[in-house]
Length: 171
Image (cartoon, rainbow, N blue to C red; front, side):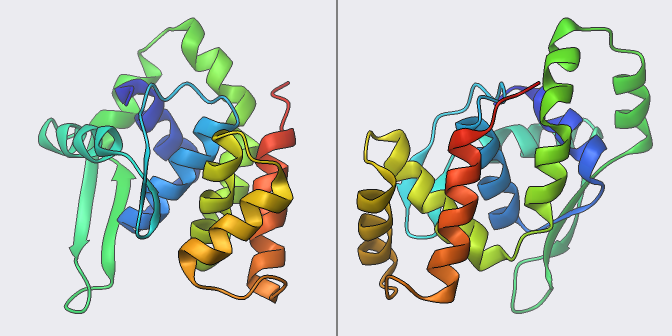
């Protein structure tokens, strides 16, 4: 994953709670054409990218982002936020890529506020849509994959997220 893209994302969202949330938000932004340069696979918890995990670890190592907390059940999950050094580096970076990424800021801020289960299920639906399935088939496949009843409130909310991502037009 592009380091600048991840740092920029965290500068918009503020602290981002959880590795799963980070993965799903980045995947959904990726589907909306946010420049991640990440590859995703379908994992038990929905789309997952080793690139995203490695990039976040690399940015922690060089003190651009801070990872706090711990894995449940001991902690409340990991939390990621941009450090002062990361903020300073971003402020001193002039790149046309940042201007292009700004088109996704409001979408990113909406996604981080979504219910985590809706994000996970919505990202799974979006994954199948990325694979060429229409929305109804993607919902059916996601429900089967996640063992959830089609038509439930959570599926309706997840479908809303996936459709929003696939119709997003960066302006």
